[in-house]
Length: 349
Image 1 (spheres, rainbow, N blue to C red):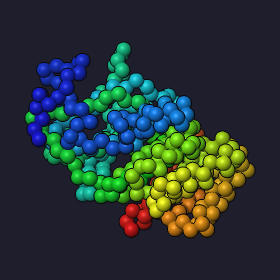
Image 2 (image 1 turned 60 degrees about the horizontal axis):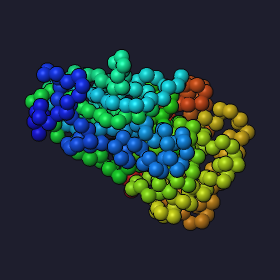
Image 3 (image 1 turned 120 degrees about the vertical axis):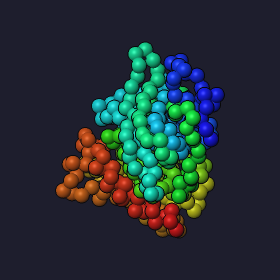
Image 4 (image 1 turned 90 degrees about the horizontal axis):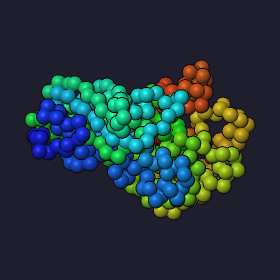
């Protein structure tokens, strides 16, 4: 398909010499990681879960747009009404977009559309220049920004096509805390679900909600209704205490199993075992292992356990976090090793 001015949308700053701005909700773009528009969870489900999830469900962690083009530049333009600030977010992870090209079957990092916000405006726009050869493009959305619309700007007269599906198109669904969300990663594409997706060429959904993943019934029932290849259940860090985990962890698993009796489930304990009260953390770790063993004893042949305490090498444990709690890029790479090994075996069966 040849890109023409007539295909584009008019933005407030569009001029005669502007790129052609195309809405990513339309073909041939493929939008991943969202439920409706740019929401990760439908508004009614998020609201019924908690006030914090209602807010974070609109942020774009795990969102991606994929397409093929020979445009010699790519512009990203996102209109947003909210972004979350924190000392552990880099600017690149908070409001930047990562771009990858698929080369010889592997995604290769090509740059960051650095976040920028013109004075008095509620949009971010940046441009990167490339050759005019055909390329398969994946752009990762930032982790904590809520978009209302999103456009890709391309050179008039270039070609644009749909890309092939992922090798494993049915998504792996990750549910959990800020560590699933990606807090502490240096860039938007460096959360452990994103790394696993690139290594295995598998689709995924990031349902990490920083500080707000507590296995509430509305969110667990929603997750149980999703199409998926594997479910990663990793919310230990957000349980307020042992009693909460005791009352919700196995119950959440049973809610999921009622709708998906055969889907592989990976239960995980917290990777940040030394953060906070170590004794309490050990109790939670033991509980999750016990729930895994209980599920197996009850006949579940598709249940797996990852011991978060074992993920980082002892000699590098202090170097694997950005703040003593959240992983940095090295920490997320080790997490991708641990989770990815099991996920690879499961999706290749």
